Image (cartoon, rainbow, N blue to C red; front, top):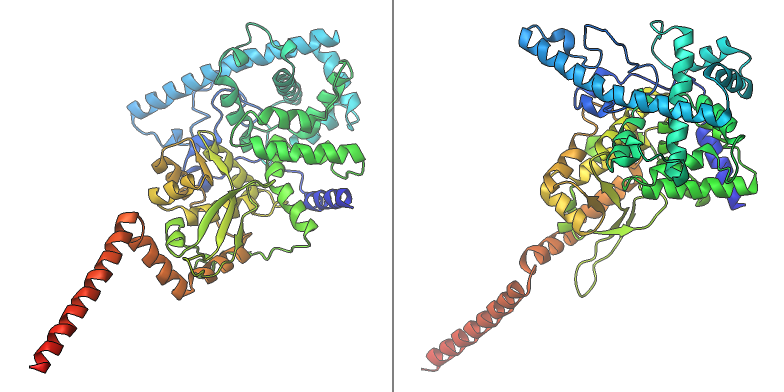
Length: 487
């Protein structure tokens, strides 16, 4: 029964994906906060950042045409040249990985392309190319069909070989720059999770199934292989592992409606690893989450520091999804204040976190097949964290694993969704419960008094000494009055 529930929930969350165009150029309204978060550093995947040698204008910097001064244009040109050099290095790695696959299969590039088309659902090269182009929301007339086909195969082989090398040590070469530099794989992960840097899943799956047929050993699905690779990132380790366990269980029972074919691209898979476990849990508990447009007057939460002063505590919990945040309502106890606990799965914030969340939010805003779960999470965390003190409080409670400074961590949350329409908000019920608990003024006053006046043993001692001195003073005054009256 539980396995059937998993299958139905995953199917339900995917069946709304009817629009094929799912790879977008990020709109300028989103890019203006931090354009670098959407731009590849070391590898270009797909057509949007397709290397165009000999271009006189910067096709990387959107602001290039606005540079009227000579100095600005020169700086922009230098920036473009540096970027092209970095991308060119990985283009050479792509060729190396492609050659490894061609040698392993004992075919040339033309034969490989023919085999890939044969293993796919496409009838010929024209339909294969058309299906690939249909995934992109921008016109790609500047790339010929031949170049587009070769690009998909080359980039696809690079990705498949990269993820296979992550899992199988014997595939790694001694002179491989990706695995010889400790930080290179992390730079690649940044680029592979950009909305503009995606490849259609059917291309990857067709290549993977073809390559897998020539290999012996463990035949994991492509989703499992990729999730395994991304568990190397602290910010994604728990989500990817949790979702991988769901998929393995699903595959084991063979009831799944969620084959790899339901995935749109790599970023879609990573989003599912965060969102789907939460939806599965809600379905198991027959919970229907109320969603509504975000209304600051109704849903605006108090900061972590304000909630703490109201007696609300924060506790780190282990759950399948980082989105699974709950409020346990409390009561005032005789020995102190207990006005509820906000339980939050730990979120590890590092150098790649901003780019990851910005691109997840971007695809939720651009793709009509998605609801706004990740965007809602960003809004909720921004409400909780508005100052360095809030960040310190949540880090102390181990709710946030912050690899940045408290100030940078705070800025990360505060800038995530600026300029984004709030639309449907996923945490309506949670915010209403929290605000209801905060509004219990008796609890809030007692909690604030306890926090401010009894925060350490010295203030407690001073308070009771003050009470004792007051009592002695009253007793002395009473005795003096009695003595005076008797006279």
